[in-house]
Image 1 (cartoon, rainbow, N blue to C red):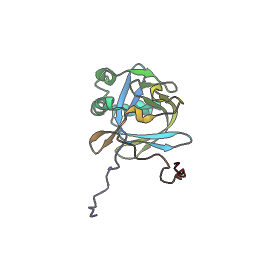
Image 2 (cartoon, helix red, strand yellow; image 1 turned 120 degrees about the horizontal axis):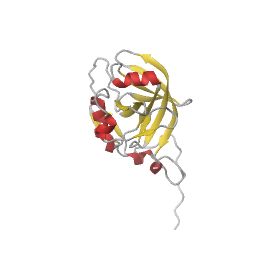
Image 3 (cartoon, helix red, strand yellow; image 1 turned 90 degrees about the vertical axis):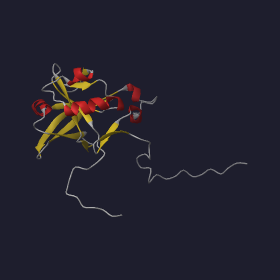
Image 4 (cartoon, rainbow, N blue to C red; image 1 turned 90 degrees about the horizontal axis):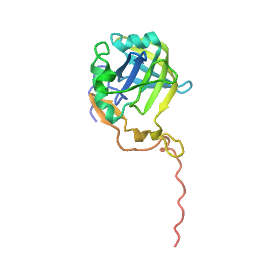
Length: 194
């Protein structure tokens, strides 16, 4: 395999594009964030990176709260549109026909159309250059009950979530394995009767 060496860049792909809701309940906003990730299990924490010139930056910095809303295939157009339009100029919820619902543990809204909402409280803001990194504790998760099986297990594959990879929105594909499958012991084969 022959490889070229390029200068350092942000080519870690695919990424989970998320719709982050922020602002007040009376004047909420949505921002598309491409750089979002899990950073800690105990306590449950994630991070988002936002440019300081974005309208949502001040809303998140000043309130110390936001909600990460996981987008589905049906929300792909909204994900793209909310990433190129500014909340300074337009009500993104109204323009996209989306619905804001009160969050359970933070004083902002969640996106009702999203099947999974992670309510977050900022613990730290780190200026990095073009973006500031907001570290946040996930204080509540709102789950659409249609994603639960009869035993209450979350079946996130039913949500039809999307990813973003090098300028394209993609649907998630077939399952290739489950956590730990590479080291799981195989059940012994039963002898055939007959």
